[in-house]
Length: 490
Image (tube, rainbow, N blue to C red):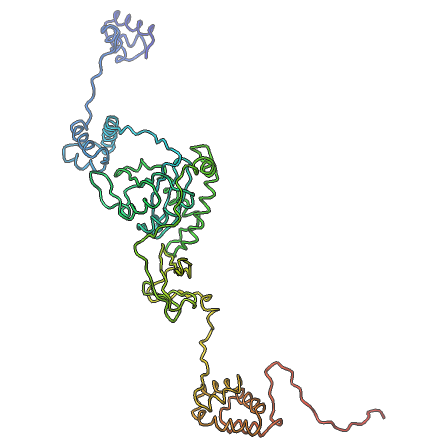
């Protein structure tokens, strides 16, 4: 931009020489500059109007605006470009993206919903939502005014699971808010009429039991419950990883996961919240807890009618083609089976009181979940085969005690087919030599694997003259005969 003095010099030089080139040579500038200065001077000092340059996307601008209005600003430039190419657009993709961005901004400027920030009331709203990551579902709830957070993990999003976790949330808070706000969960939604959600009968009964009003968001309107959307996003991207639950194909221990989630909730609820500049747990205890509704005396049954089973002789119940053990004292009784997530609980109701008999993790069909404590101790390493005498000779021989039973077990394992017929002979040896001598002979016969009655008779005949070998490693004590000695001093 030339200064006023320079422009006057250019005008004077042009009047003197009468040509752009000559004036440019005198003023040390270019002919184009001289021409612009002279044209602006002749136009009264104002610059010449610039003609608007036509853009290459103007022929399709109206089509783009119509498409954006039809899709409410959701269609992308990548999806629109092939259609506009067919309509005659020949420019670049980058220039077309600018057109779509400007058209979307114009549409949103005139179609804003006029949303205003939420104003929460103490004891009024509890906002709930589900999230899922790698097959692991996370249930999140936020008490809106105090910002108290509740997070638990589950293996599905069924109605029974949702209502059970909602009941657990009420018990953790120590009360029931007036309204529970959720999105249009399929497990809680029976129908939609005139854009109003009709809750399921089970949800209505559950809400009547706890005395709260169920409320639902509009469709495709996550902003109305954004207070819990942030918590769901954090639980999926940070809490699951921080608790060590990103285990790929390995099964997740749901009980350990929920214990970690409960510990995390206790920690964050005791920390100052950045938005309300207060500690949620203190805000709940000092202000909001008194405004919550009271908890009912009993938790309602969730998940339809009770599933009952009879405990069989193995002290087990069958569920899902699998066996689950209970204490042996419950054999023959009727018990109730409840399943929550991957946990199975067996309850016993007697005289109006309900007790937990056993808790198991679900196993596959054909498998068994057995607790050793239900049977009085651990399972033996090898199965026990008890000696059960039936005939008179068998009962008399087994009456000799453990040594006789060990002799019978060893003879049976060795395949002694004449053992039954020889029991009478062995009993006769007891009468001839005495019970103690027979027991010592049976113990020696068992040690050397001699199972015939004649072998036992030979041992009894040898008496104390029979050698008594000792196990390897034991000291061998031998009584040597005395021999005459002579002095070596001469």
